[in-house]
Structures are given as C-alpha cells and as structure tokens.
Amino acid sequence: MQKYTEGDLEAKHILIEHNLRLVAHIVKKYQRPEEDNEDLISIGTVGLIKAVITFNPEKGNRLSTYAARCIENEILMMLRSRKKSSREISLYEPIGTDREGNEIQLFDVMETTDEDIHEKINLKDDVRTLYEKVESELSDRERLVLKMRYGLYNEEEYTQREIAKRLGISRSYVSRIEKSAVEKLRIFFPES
Image (cartoon, rainbow, N blue to C red; front, side, top):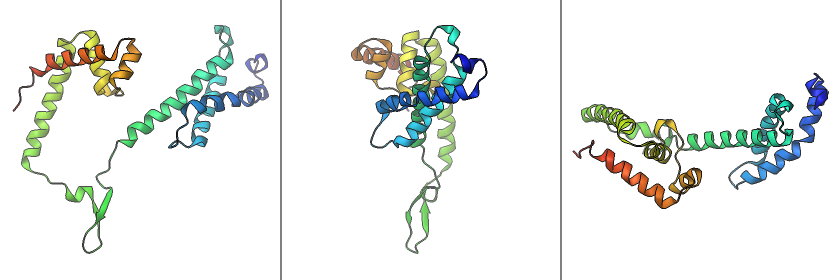
C-alpha cells in the first residue's frame, strides 16, 4: 500500500489482483439464479478498483474492510437500478399481431377520452396535496415509514418487515404507524 500511495502504479495493480478473491467472496452473497455471475463479478471489480483508488490509510481502516464496503455498494446500486427498470413498460412494446399479421403495440390499443385530461389534472392536484399534508400533518416517524413503504420522494419501496429491520422496531409497530398515518391523510381526500 505504501508504494501505491507513493505513486507506484504497479503496486496499484498488485493491490487489485490480490483482492480479487474478496470480490468473489462478496458476490456469493448476492448470487441468485436470475443473476449472471460474471456481471456481479465485473461490477464488484469496479467497486474494488474504486476502493483502491480512494482508500486513505490515514483514516485507520484496513483496505480489505473499506474495499468490501465499496464492492457491496457497487453491487447493490446495480441491483437497485435493475429492479427499477424491470418495472418499466414501453407503450411501443409489441403485444401481438392483428388478423393481417401486423404487429400490435400497447399504444395501439389504448383508449383516450377528454375525461383523461381532467383525471390527470385531479391526480396532479391530489399528489401535490398529498405531499403537502405528509409534510405538515405527520410526525417524523410516520413520514419516514410512508416514505419507505410507498416510495415517496423517489425513494425505494420496502416491505413492512424490511422497514422494521431498518428502524429496529417490530413489523406490527410499522403496520400501526402506517395505518395511523394513512388515516390522518385520508380525511384530505374525500371519495368522489
């Protein structure tokens, strides 16, 4: 490590090579049948390279400890981005063919009416009101639980069990907090 901090690029390559087994070890935790092992290794290696480049021995950490965290972060970022993009659907995605054999896209079978514009405006108003009321009517804990549960503020969505684990409380307590918060907000949205 000392040679690398003194500017020896060969030492950098040696540090990376000597820690490649760490990448393989961490990748094992994230292996699933639907994941390509080589992709995970590649992403983990990127994390290792970033760790070697940004490591500061003066902070008192070991390189392997710091690198393990960087490797996991890279893998988790990749898995999160895949999860988000897996829910996206294109309106131009082929969904079949018509009688003449022409390709039909989702966009082709969607109906639109003038009511859609009104619904969109109402929805936009409701969303704005929701965010205002979340900020003004809920406690910090209620706001946090709803933010994590429903992906508010472009956050990732979590199950009640995952939220409970992250906050160090029981799942039933998360459920009560969520129910209470939703009830507080419900009065601002009378059913049509």
